[in-house]
Length: 232
Image (cartoon, rainbow, N blue to C red; front, side):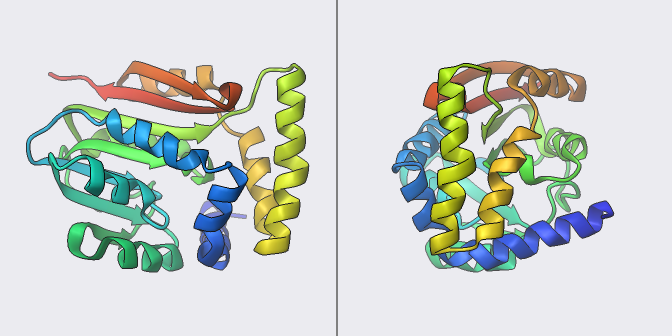
């Protein structure tokens, strides 16, 4: 498939699973997803009247957490390629965030307009990841911060085998029973083809970012990565 067709296929998949997406995230992560989002939001740089863009915002959980925990952020924007996900996000957020259907690869947003860009469990679903990272860099203000929360391929070992069994076998089974089997087969496969942490760090540096903190969850299978746009 051509890239545009791939993105449309992914958007259609998320449209299908939107209704049960939050429930399954909580169930399949044993409710750890909320804790991980709280850590991400706590890493937002302190800014008076701060502005944040949440890419692949889904049903709006990161933005909802920001509204609760970070009153210093007054301008909230969320973008996603799934209209059904955005519909659910609008119900949660009301007028507290501006939500738009938009590709991470082509952000129709002004240069240097955000103090922070976040993306939670969405980068691995972007077709052209390098282009998306360049877009994140473009819309960040000098000194702005990019926060990536994502699953990564794990090193070999017993924990990796246990995690892979859960991710490749149990997750698609539960997801298939409660939602869409094909979608929950795709999601684990997307992790296996994603950057390793080292490769992502290299790509971020190539894009122009300076690497910051990292924090691991689930024995390293999930990581929060911070990168900063150089101030000039």
